[in-house]
Image 1 (cartoon, rainbow, N blue to C red):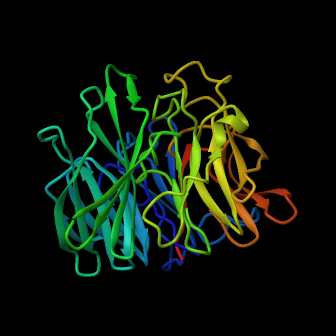
Image 2 (image 1 turned 90 degrees about the horizontal axis):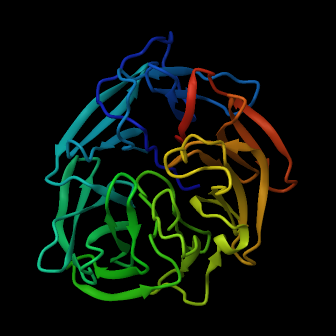
Length: 399
């Protein structure tokens, strides 16, 4: 199974530990817990997700106020991509600590989306300043084994407008030496005044030369991928077809007249399939945020409930979020009867061939991994997390 990203809710690079094991651990899973009151945020490692097991090791961070979600896990190493410092750092878990291995200073900030070109090369995109009514993005390809930048250049993207000038880089994929980017534009005014334009653009660019091959317009929905570096909004199925989701709702896009939807780009194709669309908002009456592949043509989404929150001020703290399974062939969407969850931008879903595991923070102040059997639809309890947690930001598989 494709390894998942570890994107933690962290702001510093020095770690401490309150409990030190007698020997090195070999964890299968890691959680990032945003804890209550002034208790430090922590990484929690575990060998299993079963209800009868306890977490193996907890590493508290030396701050309680967290500003960024920027950690990536791959092949035994943790990588930190910071939009605040423009530093790219490499860490390794050694005993009960995360140890800094190496770092690279980048020129840009505002990193929005990433992809792995292969196991050794990370591709990261960020915004650059608007120039002569064109929007510009900056691409870095970093060889994480050598910790060197091996490709760096500016990408010029057309279709900026006078009203919507800010570029949103939602999704990125590399196939057949072509760079595919799904992007849109937005404007901001005031604390919650974030509004997205009514069009998504799909650009295909020759990766070797950065020559723009084509741009496809999408008007069925907008705001592709949310902040993809924070939460999953795309995947490839067993056939190599690329599925992705838009989310123009209140939490990020704020263009409520357009639906959250799932789209598809078939393997080997440059253009998005115009005959395929799953209209989530029409089916469930709400917007959704985050999509995870469960295998065999099924995906998990996380949706809001607009009747339960007042506005953006309490959107994150209300117990309102549901989880649903989507049949990608028929478009049928079915609710999973889990407790309601809280918190946004959570990477808290993992699946194997039998179960979907979801870390939920419920209204009874219980923080637990729940299990959904993909064959029988049975729901059961998994690993219980500490009650000192406020909510679970991440749950990631490390193998």
